[in-house]
Image 1 (cartoon, rainbow, N blue to C red):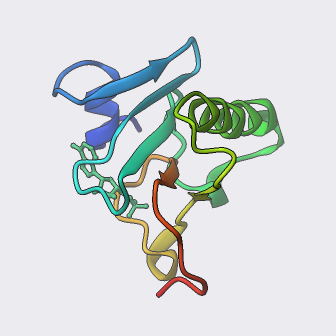
Image 2: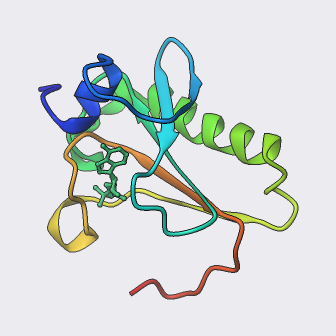
Length: 114
Ligand code: AMP
């Protein structure tokens, strides 16, 4: 575990545009942004997918969402709104197997997603 591209970012082995960090969470800009604001919130603990999370990770999952919400508020996105996404496995469109929350904002989102 931990040998994904996000593990390398957490360990500072490759660069990223980091916008937030605390003891448990790192957030950085997505390399291929799908909205004017597109930031990934990742737990420093390497959990491969949402499916692999357990009850022991409940607090960590809450911290990820609250960190995303606080960042969105700080960027002035909260009033107009934004989207958070967790892709899980193949049909979910997951490509990096280190759990992460996408925060997308700054444009009007469509539903359903493609
Ligand atoms: P997902 O498809 O949900 O697994 O999302 C993976 C995301 O990671 C995609 O939106 C990619 O653009 C993004 N990504 C991949 N490599 C990097 C990187 N080195 N730095 C920042 N974002 C990345």
